[in-house]
Image (cartoon, rainbow over all chains, first blue to last red; front, top):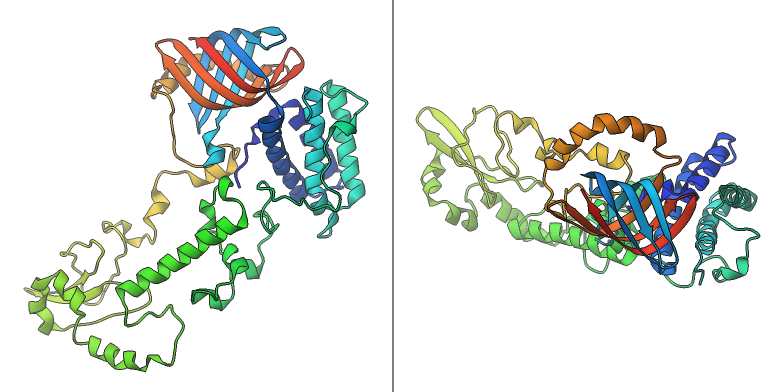
Length: 106
Length: 358
C-alpha cells in the first residue's frame, strides 16, 4: 500500500526516524521492523491530520520558485505571511511541499 | 479528542505504538520492552524539540479496547496481516495447484489473496481490505479462464483434465485437418491455400491458428486469430515465430514483453519516496514544461542556499494539495492535512488557502 512519506520530514517524523536509527544501530531493532514502524507512522499521521485537526490557515507571499515533479508540488515563498485563526506568523522564506491528495484515495 | 498540537502528537504516538505492538510481541519480535523503549526515546526527543509539552497527559488519548486487536475493522491495517514486506513464502508465491482450476465455489480465498503480484500490484490504498483484493484476484482468474474458453471451447490445457471429455479427443484429431469454422469466416482468402500443407499448432498459450500460404517460391505461414496480426508476416520454413499482441518489428521480436522498454522508470518509482505511487504525470494546472526551463536559471543560485538550510532550520510546510491554479502570475492553491514548522513552532492544519505572486 502506498503511503505518503512526506510527514517523516516533520519534527515528529524526524524524532521517530532518529529513534529508530539509534535502535537499529545498536542492534535492538531489526531494519525491517523499523520500516514497518515508519509505514505505520505514515498511516497514523495521515489519519490524525484528517480527523483530529480542524484548523484553517491562509498563506500569502511572493513565489520565488515553483516545481511540479512526480506529482509533488514544491513552492518556495519569500516574505510570507501565514495566518491562523489565533495568530499570524511572518517568515522571510518558507518551503512548501505538497503531495497530490488524490493519490491516496484512488 | 485532542485539539492541541501536542495532543495530536501524543495521539499519533499512542496509535503507532499500539498498532505495531503486535509485530513486536508476536512472530519472534523484540518484545514489549523494546517497544516501550522506542516510545520513551521518541517522546523524549520530541520534548527536547519543544513540540511536546510534558508531562504527558495520556487521559486525553482514547486508548484502543484492551485485548490488543481492534474490534472495528481498520482499513489502514492489512486484512490478514500478510504485509507486503514480509518475506514471501513458497505458499504465497506459488499457490497450490487447485488455483489453476477456477471452478466456482472451490476457490480458496486466502490463496487467491496471495497470488504473486500480477494482480496485487494494482491494488490501491482504498481497496486494502482483503475482500476487495480477493474479488479483484478472483475476477482476474475468472476473466482469464473465461476468455480462454471462449477462444477454444474444445480444448483448454489450463483446465484440469477431466476424463469425461472423451468426446473432445476425436474432435481434436479432426482439427488437424479442418480449421474451426469460426476461424474460416475470418479470412476466406486463405481457404484456397488449405491444400498447401496445413500445419496446425495448438498449445496452452492460445496462439493463432497458422495457415500456410504458397506464395511463389516462398512457403509462408501466417497466423490468423482474433488478434490483429498483419497477414504478410513471412518466415522461413525452418523458423516459425510466434507473435503475441501488437506486431513488433524484427528487432523487438526478441522481446517477450514490449512494456519493458516503455518509458515508465519503474525502479525510480519504487526507490524514491513512495509518496506518489502511480507513474502518470497528472498536472492539475495549466502550467506546462516551462516549469523546468524557468527553473534552470534559478537553480544555480538557489541550490547553494537550499543545500545549506534545507532540512534543518528552514521553515517548512508539509501538506497535500487539492488544487493548484495559476492566472498569469497569480498562483492559488488549496492544501489540506498539513504540518507547518514555522518560527520553531509546529502548527497543524486541516485546510489551507495559498495565494502567491510570482
